[in-house]
Image (cartoon, rainbow, N blue to C red; front, top):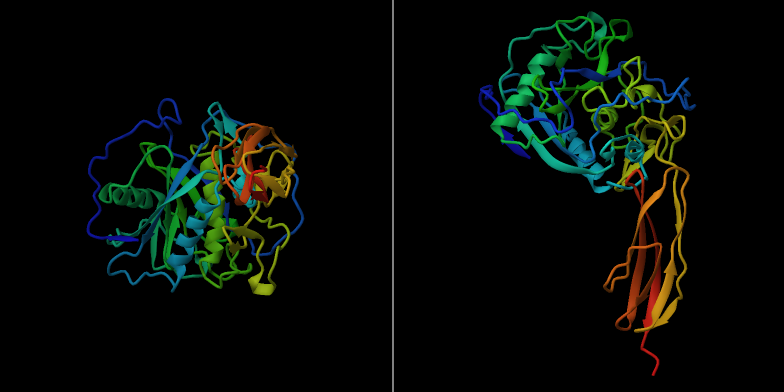
Amino acid sequence: MSVKGGALLLGAVVAIVLSLASGAVAKPFAGVVRDLPTARPRAHVAAAANLPYAGGPVLHSNRTHVIFWQPAGSRLSYDPGYEAQVELFMARVARDSHRPTNVYGLSGQYTDSGGPAAYDSTYGGAVLATDPLPPSRCIEPAESGPGWSVCLTDAQLSREIEGVVAADRLPRTPRDVFFLVLPNGLGTCETSGPSDCALGGIAAGSFCGYHSTSTDGTILYAVIPYNAVPGHCQSANPRPDASTADPSISTLSHEHNELVTDPLGNGWIDAAGLEDGDRCVAQYGSTLGGSGAGEWNEVIAGGHYFLQEEWSNQDHGCRPRPAAASVTFAVPKRVPARRRVRLAGHVRLPHGSILAYDWFFGDPPAGHHRVTAHAFSRPGTYRVILRVTDSAQNWTFASHTVNVTHAAS
């Protein structure tokens, strides 16, 4: 994590043209995770119709960056371990890219003319910004509970993000997305409040997070408030990492998925302004393990998380992950060296189609068809792996161990 302080560099920023969009881009305030009671419905919710396509772009890959803002002299700070948990989550999400084993694997079913909104993420790292606070420009509603010491508008937060990106010379390509993770006590409203504010109560139309773009449309970002506030934003849900970051990580997952499937607010979004995460904001599916406060319903790169589900057009409802493909192949347990062995992959896929078969033998060359043949060059124990890529750009694997003996004389 790099640490950058000093005044914001709010000078002219070189504008890049988003290859994702044509013409001018209106600044959306989208993907709002509404502040709901922390009850945990288990049943899948069905909607009248699937999520429609509005014609805009999706992200075919993405690189994530986290900005933690701890303003100098403000006494605003993060709980112990909070930042580390967020960073670990982002790194794990990147590590599990292309695997249909968690909620991120659902995004590839949503496409534009260039292909799917693939689960293809890399983690670009985090920045700790210490820029001083600007004057508060909004008022949180009284029922919000935490007693915010500071309230900033989306416009102010957007300027902070733009300043950090410029000062740290962070990449701002169309695939780069930024998460501004706020400390405890830093409240935010869309404008002046007290409606459309963080943790402001249901009647006030409040939110747990949102995503948007910079005014010139060149920076995609999401704002993740501190959500571990009693009665708000999943604060009573399980915390498998025993961290106050756990409630905000589910919101972060929501916004990340929406940034991929609807980055500019004109991609996969319905007439009510709901995106794939919005339709499932209070749905968590079945628990996979743990109990009580330690329950978890997602495994990402070995880490346990309690995350909301995402809408799946393929399944006509909220789901925690894609329907699993079944991949099999047979191979003899013993094979003489230099003898060609024929291998055939067999796949059962609930949705979509198979785009590629890739065989890895631990002994070159690789194979690239459903049916292939290979001769191992020398004796030894080899792990044969078949990786299939489906139309959502998700990977499913099968493997077998083969003992290669000396060639028959």
